[in-house]
Length: 361
Length: 183
Image (cartoon, rainbow over all chains, first blue to last red; front, side, top):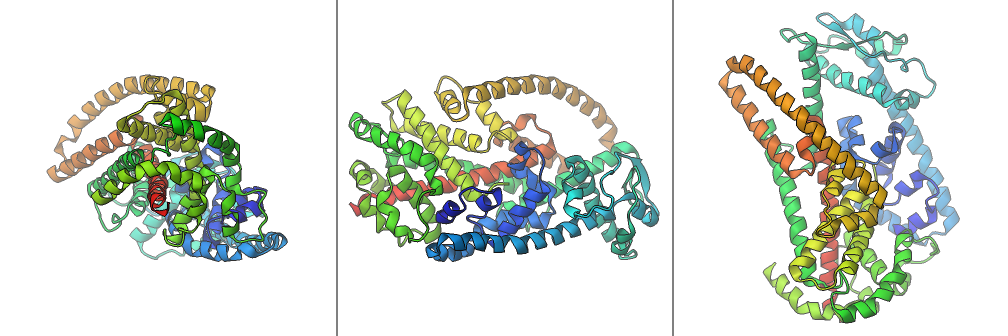
């Protein structure tokens, strides 16, 4: 899959992102990009996900796992010459774009559903809370634009959506809101926060309720992220699971760093002066090549992966092997190791150690 | 949202860089030292591969100290200016949120007196959640100074990052295993 990255060559963010994940996640990545044109520091963070509907975000989350099948397909394409690839990419972008637009349209329908005038028809036991006006939800040729325009507006659109769903559930299917949303065109400076019968309606408790809903939505995401957590109900129990998960991950990091420290003195290199003497030049020379060439810029596409293995230095080799481990499940990867002579000579001293540890494991 | 594997690659790159910085600073290390170096550099690399956009990563960077050399690593990976800025801003945040925390506590105490007539079960449930939230605050770096919403967001991000870290480290550990027998 790295080879594909090489062909795309970082020309566009879309191409860059499409490298590992399959069609599915390509769509979603693009979609997210479309939706999140908010400042760069947010765009890279996971929390950007939270603005998406839960299901999409979840699919995104799980895409690394599901990408395995897709990568296989990509790997088989390795021998395809370069021009074809660009064509392939173009082909890819078209359906995703249409799907994206369609989805975005759906999304904006949802958003507009909450735009004030529709709800003013619906509202029976509802009450108005003065809020910031939604200025940008008027008829826009590109439905995406309404969404990207401003994170704040997006937020205000997003929040009522959840409430809308709850409202629907509470009221039953008395209203056909989609039809109404199509006629929704004009804008009002109000946003409705709904209260069910018997719920408090002063601004404090409304704000509190909004906050709680926000927390619940995020909790749901978190619940999906942590394995074995989605069947549990109850905030305390879910929090328990989350705490356990975080702790176990942290413990794993501790353990793995211990293991790496014990097993392979080469990983934190040059412990012995001898090793330092023979390694440092390699590492130095490797450094620039390590920065860029994980992307494989200069390697032509028209070959299989195996041919390039003799060229790798230590770090590249470790990288490559690490990533390949992901794909190949540790099996058919014993072949390239013979070519990595510099690596084994030092690891010899650690082999005793490592075997011991293996036994313990 | 970044691609998980690009995040992995980024992390590994930064991690190795951090390790190099470590090993150039001090040569003779015991296993425990090495372990600590690996752990610290992995953490810093994780935080810096997040580009310091999230609060937990900023907290990790701010938590680096000059004594164990981790500050050097952070400097090397992020650049001195960025580190200084983060340190300063985080100390500011710490101070301000301490004071606001006190105020919050006082107001909460006032509020609690009113809520005393809530049913016992609800009160217990709330206490349980509060206790766990406090634990979670202790686990997520910088979590002491977050409100609940952002705490959960940061936890999400942190869990993802931790999973990346664990994956990469495990890959490296397994490759380290595979190597010796093939000689």
